[in-house]
Image 1: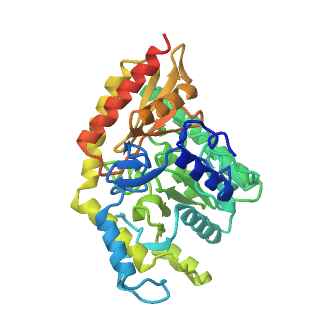
Image 2: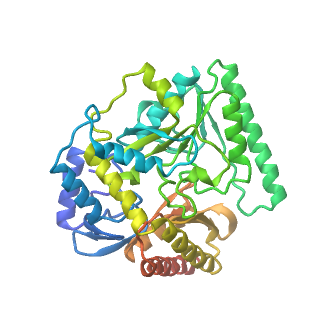
Length: 441
């Protein structure tokens, strides 16, 4: 049994469930927290554990429009009681959803493939890119995660995988201009773009060419980086000029979470060739998509009989339509902007009170802190970050952490988080930061 499973703080029923989990799923599937939570109910931004204690969910983006959202649940239930099948039959629900989703995109992104997950979306996008370009080379960030298929494991740089890093992949360091003046940020951008040039040249010299770059527009795994102006545009221009496709992985940054934009790539003056979606699309129902152009879809479809038994089913489409409907009716994008500004202002005030806090990161309802060493400003402090997460859990608020040093607090609550709940989150955060800081003296 794992160390967590042996934790003496586990209640007897939870310990028994943990033992059953290890005996079936195994001891290697990760769990949050020193004492794992057994969660049994959810509603909106609230979660309840097996002992009846409630927690504010400051972390989970899959229940995009709230845990157990009744509109989504009713739509799925209604469609499941009517008919569910695959896309080799006609059904209006699938087309209704395709039209509604594509209406949220700009320009030439007017076609889609429906899939089951973000991993499957990224796998398909890479397949499309390889076939279109005739090349195999891929450009990624040097601390990223895009899914768990074999192809994606070969380009994973942000967590442990057994697969060897692909010889056809080049990883570049994404520049972070946090705290820099404009001149320093531009110099950093130029150095980083020179690294992109070198990576593309390396792929070409090795005979791989470049088929695609695959990037998360807000660099969430990397720690919500503040890239210098012009970097993303420069990278996209270089990849596309070399014949490759630019793939925007919107699994975490999309669906209005950033407040000012529906999609993360809209933060930049770029035109992605492919956009991949997953997680929040169905509010917990598995659905994903690859958004692309008519030309790329027709090219791929003319070479491949592509279909997917469960992707794009009427039930999945009903879930997706309900999510978009809830976003529209409840004006959740506007809400994300306003609530995100409120939280960011509060976080900046908290930051003034503690040497533990470095930069305030993120925007909209995806935000965090750098946790740094007081005795060595700017140096990451992952131990203190872990302590803060555990203390927040003890205070009834769930958050997590990201970044190459595991020192960036990660908060991305359901989009329906209310102002009073946001106040609770920042109040508990202020208390936790103060307690950890006082323990340093």
